[in-house]
Length: 623
Image (cartoon, rainbow, N blue to C red; front, side, top):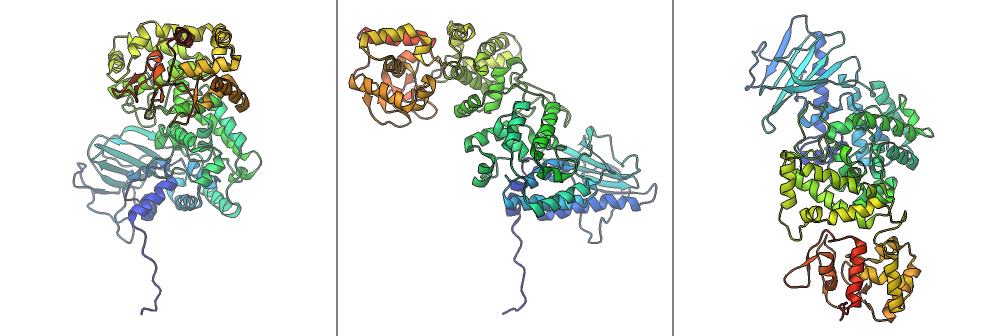
């Protein structure tokens, strides 16, 4: 037996990629193949840059790959005594961290960072503090090169690197100019080059942060800072919390996104945090790291002082305004309701679309096919800037889901609901424009799917009647169109007189007759009822045999109209078959499953009236 204790073998690269990606994700892209040895590679590049100081004026060193086209000046170079090849910058986009360590520093100090990830971030920052990338005396630039060339070159003034990525069909460019230098050697003028301004994150600041985190532990969480950032920017509260946790939209590849401890610290539910991640994920790693580059205090110790996180929120709000512009903030309950819609458009973006339809700018990477622009100088766009078919489908699906929801499921006076008529006007204007976007939108509107009547809704007068209801403001503030006492009080009185019911029972009966999803939770919200009041109204209907009691999958209620029942797969609502033709739904040929449903064929007052007319005429639901 060998008495010499041997170190355990290092973890495989894939495991390291997961560990590093989970720790740095959302701010630094970490592809497969990264390992903790990558940190050493970055240090090695730093030493290569620092080694330029030892070169004589006029001396140059070049190392190029076989596909390079730049004439070779010196055949080889040795970056360090080990003779190992320098890992080219750009691999893993770690060069995005240059001048932007604020986000990682905030993540290292946040209580919403799991300990094993915090240790990786601290290790990365400790490495970074010892490289020229943290030294503000150096000047750095990033960009692209036109040719398929990979190289390292340096002289006494600086260093330049090219990295050709065949799969991506682009060549990354990175250069460092030494203190006192004027320019780095390069084979050609780079494209879309930008300076990496050095903000927060000097070696002294980074080492001070490391010392504080290891001595004091993470900072205290402050929900008031989250609320302040949300109100100042239009970000949802969970998105604001992720920003202040230094975790603004980590990549979805790593699961779980947040563990139980992290969710508890932030104070939000899984679905809310997932929607917030989508809201921020569209910024891209570069946009997220730029947002948080300078939110840290000059002295990191201020994070642990009273109000420290509120001051971070103020700096983050200013950075957001410069990068994205401030947007209107939807009511918290409205944002939560938008999350429940589960549209492909993040809940915050859907709300912004209705709050300010014409100017609802979203991050340039929100949809694939964003209009091209230089790195870090993207062209702003809105969801209406359609260039491809799937973008049109994406937008139309979200808009019509939002129209149905805003009209019947948001209260009068809600700013998202009030924006509905303008959304319809803007959509009609774009459909009539006659340009490429109009063609794509019209194709999407006409796309065949069961129950698709979007074009009819816009042209047969239904949309006009629905938007007129919203614009008229006849509904009392805070009341819902789905409450017949608010939208058709005279009809409720007729039901009361005809059936001898209380007003509450008459309203509940009308809701069960017509509405596609009158769950107990929805009814209580629409009607502002307590459970006891709801129970009393239900007891009246049961006693009169107008309804039956039962438990049915995905119904969320125990009261049902007598007669056949149609099941449904999510997201379609299951419902009584009696109301299917009334509300414009469709059944499968079997007759016991909902096939399609999206838009009501008329206003709710008109449909409540028609439902009651059928009941009074002897055409009501029967067992």
